[in-house]
Image 1 (cartoon, one colour):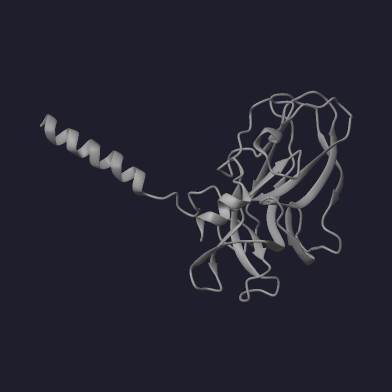
Image 2 (cartoon, rainbow, N blue to C red; image 1 turned 180 degrees about the horizontal axis):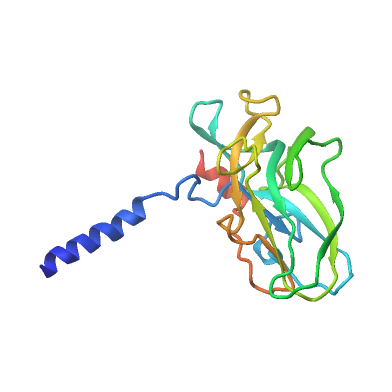
Amino acid sequence: MRKMLTTICFILCFGSLLVPDIGRAQTGDNEFGFYTNQGGRPPSVNIEVDPLVPFTFYLVLTNSVNHDFNGEGISRPVTHVGGWQAKILFPEPTGQAGGQFYPLAISMRAGATDIGIKPDYDVRFAGPGPVIGNAVTLMTVQGFVVDSAPYEFYLGVTDFPENPGAMSYSDALDPIDTWHGRSVPAYPSSGSFDAPVFSVNSPGSVVATENESWGAVKALYR
């Protein structure tokens, strides 16, 4: 009996290693997150600020890979982005009542068009945005908080998603699909829509996936 239980446990444990996370790749690719720098580096997902002092942060796509280039099931790094789609949930304070985060300014690439109904963003660039250092800035936000309470920022799936259960961005160089390029599923840098991607005055509360180097990502798909 003990031998049988040991065998069953081994099968269950080994099998769990083989079952993929449904709906996303295992390499941490195609991730949206908020950062205080445009390189999408994990240390910049938490920031401490003083009340009423404006600060700037960025919505950044990292590790961009099209896993079905030209509809042929070919994985290829995305070098130019044509637009994006996501729900952005600016926060109420956590753990304390009465405070608020206020966005002062939200800006996109020059000539971008946003047809989303807030909090949904459905953005199309006027021209392809180049991926530099394996990251591309999708949106710039300037805002402030009115107190020292901790705040957490989340991302979500839009009400009318191009990819069910996921956010999206477009590979501008893929020749098929929509007018702005093939729509590629994207996921939060925290690993879950239930986990925040950015925090204010809550040190260490957010953990983001490490951004691969551009050379390392390209090497995966040669």
